[in-house]
Image (tube, rainbow, N blue to C red; front, side, top):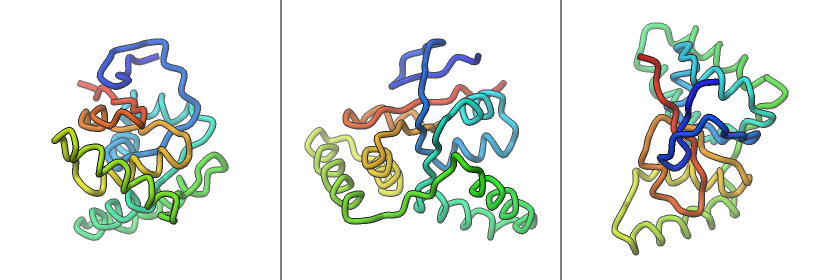
Length: 149
C-alpha cells in the first residue's frame, strides 16, 4: 500500500471505504498514478460530485482527446460503487456552513473545492484529492494523494 496523507499526516494505516472524488484525484487515476489507482480500487463507495464532473468536462472540451476522456469517464461512472453526488438543498446548506467557517478563520478556498467538500460532508465520505488545502476544512476529512515521482 502506498503512503497517503490524511489531513496532512502521513499514514500507511488509512482505512477509508467512502471517498468523495476531487477532480485532481480522478485526473491522477486517469493517468495511472499508482497511489490514486490504489485508493480508488480499495473504496467500497465513491461519490463523484457534479461540480467535479463539470470541471472535468470543461477540461475535456479544451483538449483534442475529448471523446476518449469522456468515454473513460462514462465507463468510470457506470461502475457499481460510483455514485454521482448532485447539489441539493442539504449540500447547499453544508456549503454555506463551510464557507462561513472558512471566512471566520480567514482561510478561504476555491468555491468549487468547497462545493466538493460539502458533497463529502453530506455523504459522510472523505475527500480524495491531490490538493493539500482541503486539510483546512475541519468538518470534512481528506486523503491527500502523494503523487508518483
